[in-house]
Length: 75
Image (cartoon, rainbow, N blue to C red; front, side, top):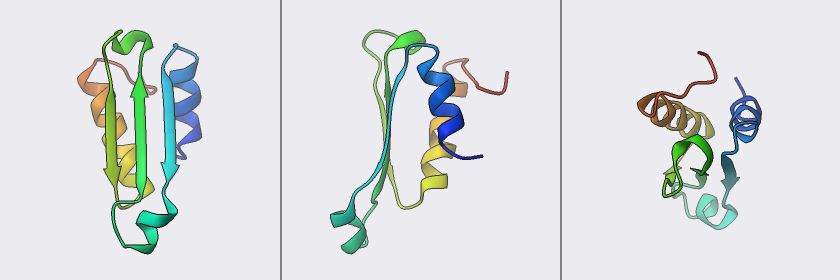
């Protein structure tokens, strides 16, 4: 699965999602991939961020977070 599917699913529910890669961090061999979600059914004061070394790890982390909030694009 690519990141666009869950991003679109979240956006349709009012969740703001950012998925990015930081070139400076990549060059420095640091955790360059980041995903951030907030709002919508996650709650007004919700905020989740993961900085990891691989895009698939960001997706896995996001899906685990959503499952913990009883939200899933697969339900």
